[in-house]
Length: 263
Length: 268
Ligand SMILES: Nc1ncnc2c1ncn2[C@@H]1O[C@H](COP(=O)(O)OP(=O)(O)OP(=O)(O)O)[C@@H](O)[C@H]1O
Ligand SMILES: [Mg+2]
Image (cartoon, rainbow over all chains, first blue to last red; front, side, top):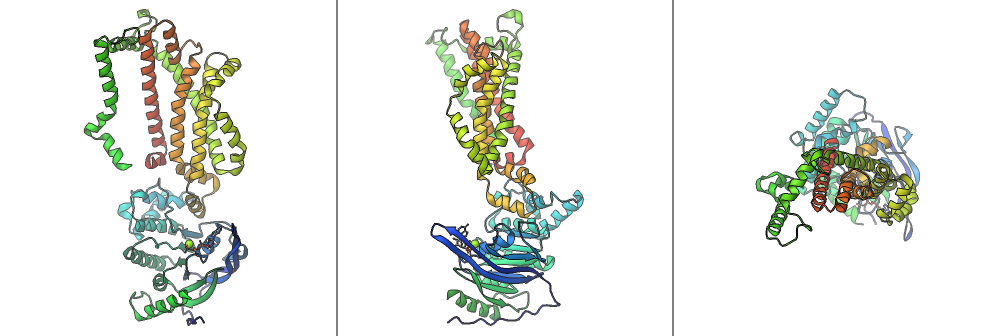
């Protein structure tokens, strides 16, 4: 028997609009071993400004889900609606932070951050101003002229954050963005992400297989089952922010999530 | 890559590239001075230097080859330039298309690889029939020979561009055309550079081939002419001149690309 996790109802100030609807999403692939169902009837909604963690074991389809929401691959069935209109292709309203390094290696930190503004009709001054602001927000002003190959993993992910946040996406999709960092830098990046989120107020879908990461970040955790991937449980984390990493409530949650992941 | 760049410019290391030419020149002097090789097979360096000087700076009255350098080099550069430009104009876009789009890959792969198996020199008789002796034949041969390395490297480069970069571009709102110039070309730049450099190098080889057929001017023509007159010193001068111009043009190509494209300087 699966021990049920107690779902805590969300308590947020005011009534938030649901902006992202994931509706009965299924996806499978044809492989050498025949058809494999990866996602099965996944459905959830996200409010504006909500931080949702998607927690599941390796191979349960987290990345696939994120790619569908990002518009990189089409859903098998079901649909993704952003503000009521279906998602068909990638776009700056839903930006992705990839797990691997996806910075442009021929551009400096500053140029990488400015990349997305190139096509926009704004005068140079205001673009430069924005780049400056986001360089500052991720704490990389001194490294503006570095090429990506001269940066550490954590710094690369900061640039990746800045270059999409500057486009003011409504939804930020993050696929285990800090998984390859050491514990110390991971904590730093989590804190940075939280402060950016509080300042900019975008919605975040954060994929992770790390329970403590989900617990420190999320308003709500979607626990995923493996083969086929479906959402087993929704857990609201009605905890005050800033959260203490070592606090009893968090450890309690962590322990129960660990347990749930194990079965 | 960085330490290599830095070392390139530092003190004694700057002399390293000259070590082989200098050693060679020195041995040549010794061999000539000792009279080990008859002069009609290999003239001594001073003699060569004299011929070279008169070829470049002499006045026409001074001898058959005196003062012809500018004329010859100009003619050759024009032929290489036209042929190479043609190869780039055709090979680069087609290569990128075939690297990215399955249809083009299927369409051109077999043909290009079959044609590539034909040694360039085989085209010479046909080219002579089609275009006659001179500019057109040479340009044709140069363009044909330079096309393959440019095409193949562009295709490989375009194919290997990290798909994550293209995805990142797509999500940041970069459309296809702009993505081609903002992401695809820079991403493929190391391969594009390789293709261009190989293409330019082979251009010089085929230039000489085209000019051996009896055109009145050009560096290859001078060498052939000198052979018939038994002026071995002039042959050697021709070889050295081509080596130098080839090296300089490669350097110019690289600096030019680095000047024009950030990616050429930062990823090589
Ligand atoms: N293009 C594809 N073709 C075939 N199978 C695929 C494809 N993409 C994903 N899969 C399969 O779908 C399953 C889920 O993959 P996915 O990458 O979404 O997992 P994940 O939850 O992100 O895992 P991880 O935590 O290791 O990143 C895997 O079993 C994988 O083999
Ligand atoms: Mg994954």
